[in-house]
Amino acid sequence: MNKESGERSVEDWSSLVGGYLLQTESGDEDALNEALLLTEDFVAAHPDSPQAWMNRGLALWWAGKTGAIDAFLEGERSSGELDGACHHCCLYHLGRIALGDGDVEEAVIYLRKAHEKDPSHLLTLHDLGVAEARRGKSKEGKRLLQMVLEADPDFPGAAKNLQVLLFGEGS
Image (cartoon, rainbow, N blue to C red):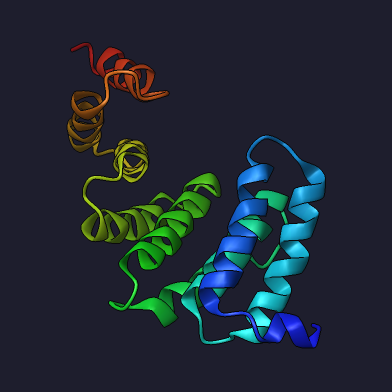
């Protein structure tokens, strides 16, 4: 970490890293590699910042590297009630990772907490519906997916997931 990077505020770091993370969504590998390097410096410069840990977790997760869970856990622990958006983001991604790993019980725990933080976040609501269905709570899964579709009828995957649940029960 250079002297200049240590003098950046959390807001400056978040803005800088956020720009690179947005570029990664379009598949820009160079931007992802830069985000990985920058988030390492961000965490070193501001080790108590939930935003630093959240951004580090996002970069590691998108890169498919180990350490994302630990970064999101640290972001979740350090954010608490202070930063609702950051806390929600860490909880949501912990739930996504657990769901992807097949640990639906843990996914439901994190996604419920994320939903409590931001009830209007449709990705959380959708993934919670999927997780509930996977753990055998199809009625709850259907209810949550229907809520997503009521808010956004074109939400990617929600209609298909709801159809699978309805077909599976013969409803």
